[in-house]
Length: 327
Image 1 (cartoon, rainbow, N blue to C red):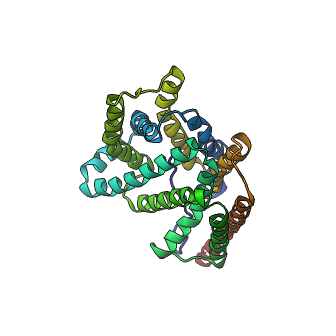
Image 2 (spheres, one colour):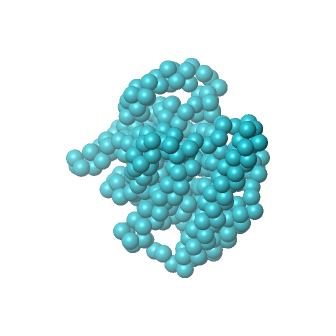
Image 3 (cartoon, one colour):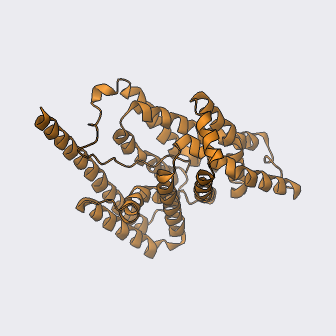
């Protein structure tokens, strides 16, 4: 889908500051609305890009990159982060790192657009449902983070669901798994990159911009219309930059106003809305294999969220005990 930063729970230690109390978030209601708006917009993006089915997927992504650049630059300017952008562009190691993540997000965007315009929104939503669990696995085997028994159980149940889909609907499974793996790997690499979310995405789109311009120029030279064959399609292509940037603006605003744990619970809203669009708005096939797979993955996500809630409560208890011991 559109880019949104990966959310992972921070692990508390004895040396870390206690988690902010509710009174530390005086604008929490407004922050929740911003977060709800961001994930809601990401969830209904299929409706937007469905209007562009007459345009090749690569051209849609090229326009999305092209028109995202001015919005992201404006966002950096409003946030006073232009110095961060200059620093990232001047650092060869950072540029090399972001060139890799740009490749991954480019693949993810292209496949997502293909899924939407070719009638496979359901496969796309499955991929993004799997994403948090893929993040957990990468954290375990790449970052050597410890997993609880509940998290291992969630992964096992999700794997069983994917296996059921492999038996009954293999034709679309590659879309789900590629979206999941590309975005989870992207999230891991961005977690390790020394740049914030907006600056990093701006550099990534700038790195992809020459490819986008080259594709559009070649497409126009071959005789294809650069902006579609009517004003409506042209407007949708131009506004794809806003469709990328506006949810991100809402997300960054929400991240400053509410705890990340609250924002993390909202991340499942986007694939849920995509699922509803696929089944009820666009009548995509939903057979027994899909029911088993989604049922298993929803069960896995319930276990996953429960494990996060329980871990957060245990961390608060440890912090309270530590505070009492120090007094």
